[in-house]
Image (cartoon, rainbow, N blue to C red; front, top):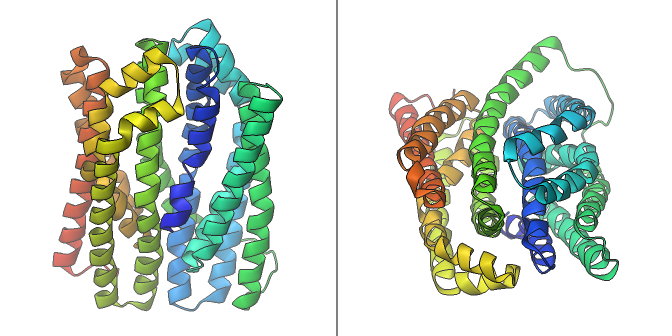
Length: 422
């Protein structure tokens, strides 16, 4: 899980590095705005992966193969419905990018160019979330590794071919990611089909019952709200950064790749926690559940410390690797100290997100995110708005810290009440 998730940020890193070496900052700012807009929409759909992992892990623990199949089918139907809706809303979404960002005309043009191509990867990207969640829930750790590695290799090769060789610019980066998403879908279907055969799950399509649909929608609703609030905070970083100028927007785009590198590495541990905690809940095994939580926290702390040391020693060189635009490099280096401490601050929220997904306690995740967004992000930013971009990074640090603290408090509360397995 750690290996597969560390490779995920390569999609963004390669796009940033290739575009970051073009002639002007507006290309990098444009792809930052366009890619972050796509990321908001696709990450809003992260509830598909989370809910699938939790319920599949619990069904596996209780050895209910019929429930496995029904839950998988329901999630695929939900993913396709959400994806088609996004594609149909494309004109409205592109208009929103221009209106909300307040960026220059050149930056908005590049962002809309990227978005208009990449949005058509929604069906593949969202189905991939369900297929990934299914593999995680089934404890098939190698599957996501193969899938993500394959996706990134395809994306890297096509990025270089389309942007560097064919000189398609931002459009080339968008086409590279779109083709990578659909290539990954083909591999994911192949891997999931093998899992069905291995576990002797009958491959037949039947409509889910009304009760099953309501339960899944209720779970997905709360995780969706949680994901919406999370993306609201990250989007605020991008769109407010655009108002501070294209250099600030471009610098934040580079630094957010650092944060993504951290998040996906720690999410690698969290994904394993989802599967193990969900399996333990399905078996109603309290001692195993608490053991996996302790193991996850331990390894999360180790990796957070390693990332902090890595950014402290090599952060400046990594910035220069991602872009050679002098004003962007200088601007990014000013805010680098925030990224040095952020892995340690954010570790708890990533790990306990995984724990609560495994427990399928979506309401607790939703409530934690509501409280943290209001009092951990927007309130600190309002108090430090005069700090400008430093205020943004301060708010993000407070947000991550409070997410971890509230989830840890709720987990401790459930332990004391003896209701973890309910």
